[in-house]
Length: 484
Image (cartoon, rainbow, N blue to C red):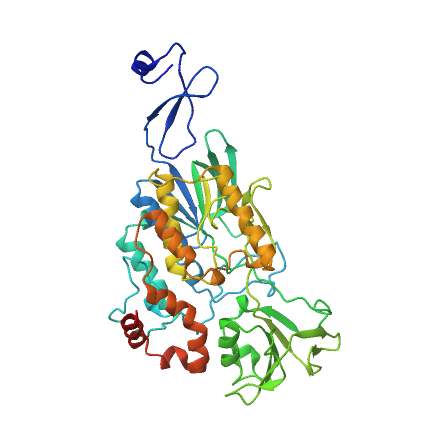
């Protein structure tokens, strides 16, 4: 029976009409004839306030919660810790398995070391309507310490009244689609009752947004002899302070921000530090500004007698190997029957790094992309998800989204771009941020922010280890603004 019988009376051309269940967030109900085909172009709008679960209470989860709330959706944020912050919530504890290989280990979410300062200026870390400003009594530096970022997120939660949406101490252990027709998802979470006992609870939601971060599951360097090497091995995820490396010979693998920070911090205490890196510039040489640190090519092998052999032919008798080798995406709670997989760090299939075509818009991911201005991308993705779920923005058809994903994969394969770089946007320059802005009908990011982000490596190279304090960012912004 139709909700509005007058439609049948007024428009019927001899065929009874029936109501079809909608899969669209804006509550569209299409009218079908007996054959199941659309009979007339009439749409009944019955917008709903869907229940949406957000997994994670860090940077991405909080801005996603705000955008969902703004669109009138019913939001619940599941956060494992007892405080907001995600990766920015410092934890002095480390995992029992320092390499992070044991799947049954107790996970420590944070990768922060005690001395960490941000590696991007605060000017591009805030949101469009909530900048990361210097505040009285806070860390005034342009590149502040991690404590200042946590304070920024705490203020964000307070000012947008998000605290009431967050369930602290709730670790999500299962997300699973239980009713495809009605897009019902079960979210199972656990809370600790005692040291050895957990309480499990299941709840149903219409949509789930996954914002659990990408800096928790370590990626480890592979080389012959690694597992039999007798010394201490650890991932930078478990590095906190330099004292344990006093008088040690340390091999450090990697050349990213964490590797450089850790090398700088441990070298005054260590006996020697040997950095192994990839690329054309990898050669045996003493590092500038360090009397006891050398750069090598990658590790050739590790021996049972404790020696580490590099591809440049050099050999050191090391005590410690620190893997500063990045992270991999990990969603152990997601049960999708193979619809969404992680293959060589490619999460897919995902339309524009957010929506699985066959499950859209009821499942989505925020903040997967690398090599993009983090706050701009995650805020824009959060707005996109929220407006799609509220019915204000429409997605392409499932087939069109799937074709878009396949086209991306084909282009990557044709250009020789490896699979693990699927979510790395650096080669796409500013296209992705601008594309999101177009979907949302908002202004694209300010040009200087994009130029700044993609100039960071040159700036770091120019100023060296002291770039955080030597670079006058405000002056640079003025100069870029004047030249554009």
